[in-house]
Amino acid sequence: MKPRIKICMGSSCFRRGNRMNLEFIEAYLEEHGCTAEVELVGSRCEEKCRKGPNLEINGRMYHEVSREMLADLLGQVIRGESGE
Ligand code: FES
Image (tube, rainbow, N blue to C red; front, side):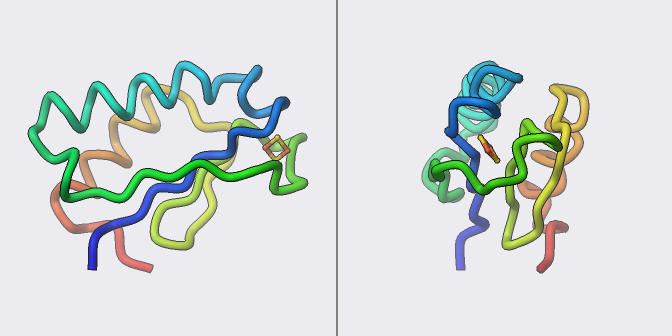
């Protein structure tokens, strides 16, 4: 099964960083030639706005996601280390 990244596109998360995070994820996947191997989906507000920007990888939720954190997480996804 493909790894699944679900990024919150609710207005709070979007404003607090997920707009840039989404661009970063898309660019990262493209750069590493794995756009087709990862499922990237958006979600509505998960009602955890205060901890945002939020995203989920293989069912695990991450909060206050920064670009540095994303680079680490995406590396794990690509290496198949992001288990549930
Ligand atoms: S906007 Fe992301 S949790 Fe509310």
